[in-house]
Amino acid sequence: MALVTTAEVCDANPQLIVSGELRALEPIFQIYGRRQVFSGPVVTLKVFEDNVLVREFLEEKGKGRVLVVDGGGSKRCAILGGNPVVQAQNNGWAGIVVNGCVRDVDEINGCDIGVRALASHPMKANKKRVGEKHVPITVGGTRIMDGEWLYADTDGILVSRTELSV
Image 1 (spheres, rainbow, N blue to C red):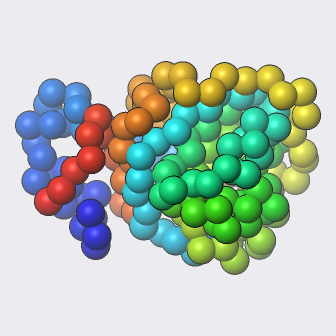
Image 2 (cartoon, helix red, strand yellow):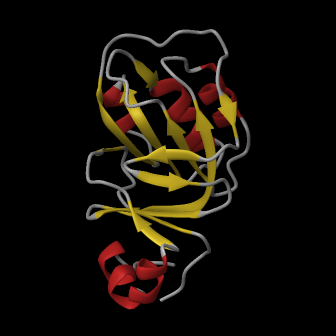
């Protein structure tokens, strides 16, 4: 879906909104990274103030996917930093959405990848390797499942059960 805005997707698919197949995340995310528009199939991860599994995912080949991390909304530390974002960019991830904080913002903003997070924070996360992969999560007031599709631009973030075309 190239060069179609999230607003256009909503306008073209009112029936999907009514059925719940197309959902918008609450507008709580800051925009980071050079790529302001991105989309792709979702991979889910649930962690809390621990970034080991985040790093492990981003070391894999992204294949145009979007990593969506439910960090519990914590603003006490950053669960995503510059080095993993550089790795994600180099490994072909389309984007990362974090229900938590990032750090090393200058480095992240230099990367050609889309990143959304609640805020920036200078403190590092724990390294306990605690979390759950490929599980249903709730981010931005929206239930998100592995394999769904995420569409992000400067207007907001949409999640769809299937890949959309307009």
